Amino acid sequence: MSKSNESTKSMTLYHYWRSSSSWRVRWGLKIKGISYHDVPVNLLADAQKSPDYLKVNPVGFVPAIEINGKCFGESLAILEWLEEAHPLPALLPKDPLERLLVRQLMLQIACNTQPIQNLSVMRRHSQDKDEQILWARHWITAGLAGYEQLLRNGNPGKFSFGDQLTFADLCLVPQIYNAVRFTINTDQWPLLHEIGERCLALPECRAAHPNKQPGAQLL
Ligand SMILES: N[C@@H](CCC(=O)N[C@@H](CS)C(=O)NCC(=O)O)C(=O)O
Figure 1 (cartoon, rainbow, N blue to C red):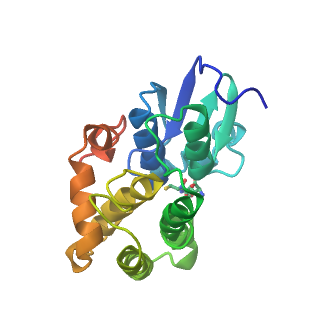
Figure 2: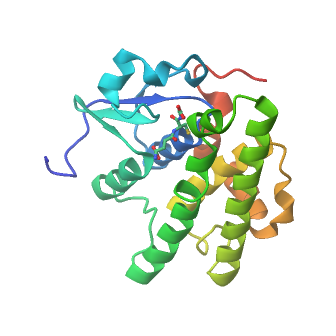
């Protein structure tokens, strides 16, 4: 692998406007001030499983990023690369135990919540739309309730970790958006709800918002 802090000559982000994993990466890129070319991948048309897209990401998920001609998937791996290659502004605290706490929050969303409610899992669970919605609501509710408890036990401030915006918030806000899509009332979790509102006021978060993306259909 080449030096992590090499200048990034060209970057292309393959993403879907309403994908929460895509929003994490868009937001991270905007915080770090990195511009990229957009390639929208329409999940509703199953474009993520097309032969052309599978050459970009063989596991058939968005997002994926092409950096200097090489393609990579997995939103958290991309964010970790971003932090190493472009350290400022920092999205992780310095202290290892504090990093552990932030990563625990991040993974509560990215491992324990989002994967169970993504499109392919919902479709595999049931072909019936109402069943799919019940399934998604169940797992999002469990995931966010857990996040709220982790916040209570942790160190919440303006954001999920004190007053520093971190990877945890980059995962939380898109998941809140998904919760709202599935008509879950997020003010039952006051800490994460307020953090989410605060994040949505940040320009980089808004610029990465689904409605601002190419291919967005305002429903
Ligand atoms: N672990 C992957 C998950 C990516 C993922 O689940 N992406 C969703 C959209 S948020 C997707 O591509 N779904 C398509 C499908 O389920 O077929 C990551 O973090 O990048």
